[in-house]
Length: 312
Ligand SMILES: NC(=O)c1ccc[n+]([C@@H]2O[C@H](COP(=O)([O-])OP(=O)(O)OC[C@H]3O[C@@H](n4cnc5c(N)ncnc54)[C@H](OP(=O)(O)O)[C@@H]3O)[C@@H](O)[C@H]2O)c1
Image (tube, rainbow, N blue to C red; front, side, top):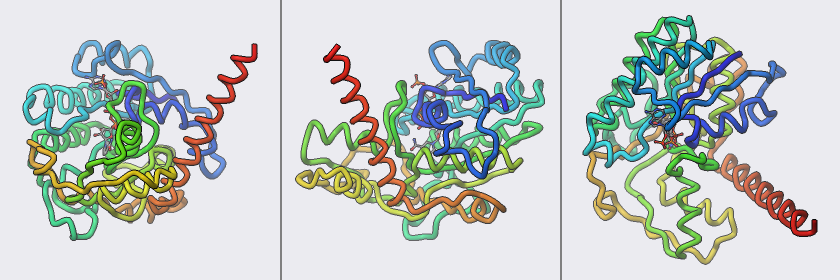
């Protein structure tokens, strides 16, 4: 399958380039020779219609995966036109390209579309009615609507991704905590919202299954279990052996957030789990352990490669 990934330098886009055809993500013996073309700023701007149509027209992908998005919800609140241009117009451009090519448009979206709901309520299902409040969330929902006008589309929502950061990304929940832990032993982390922490590699395994199995419509894809960012950060530091670090749980108000934030960013992956043959989405704690183990192994590899280089 020929797949174009938009926003390929971010957390998810980079993970696709790194893992998509590896045994960590392939499942059930299906072919592992998808051809991935990554597109991102500054060479590729999804907001430019002509450019998007021409570039994708040359690549001729069978699948377009849209990972391009703004990262900071507060920044989007004060830049509504930019948010709308990238999220909504960008997706409309991809829809047009997909329709011309007869390609599947896969729109990656987020739990923010449900707005601010009771943090103790059960995780959102695909049948829940979105009620976004922030500019970010409203434009993400509108991007879903733009994608759903494509002849062939799949919308996949997720929550609180963690994994290696992309070379271009502003970071994700794990990587931000790990970076901060090098500067200080006392970390202030939000504790007034619930999330469904999701390991990028597990997300990709599910995404690959959805695309290859011909799934369509809207589907939630998250590791199971819910927690707060502060509890996640504590588990992450413990897993890394950083036992002398402390997490100070704080509220959105203490953090100084500007945009209206959702207190319940949890999603139910029950619909995904019910699909025949779908590889299971395990609890986030096990996925976190895997992430740390892979990270340690790659740091050790870099260390021994540096030692080899010094010896020569
Ligand atoms: N990260 C999470 O916790 C999370 C949770 C739920 C859902 N999601 C969704 O998952 C998707 C991927 O997220 P992510 O964490 O990988 O985001 P990310 O790390 O911020 O990456 C997004 C990428 O899109 C690029 N981009 C922005 N504007 C663009 C444009 N006009 N044209 C082309 N590329 C553009 C960015 O480039 P620059 O960096 O140069 O701007 C960046 O490389 C998004 O739809 C996001 O909403 C993420």
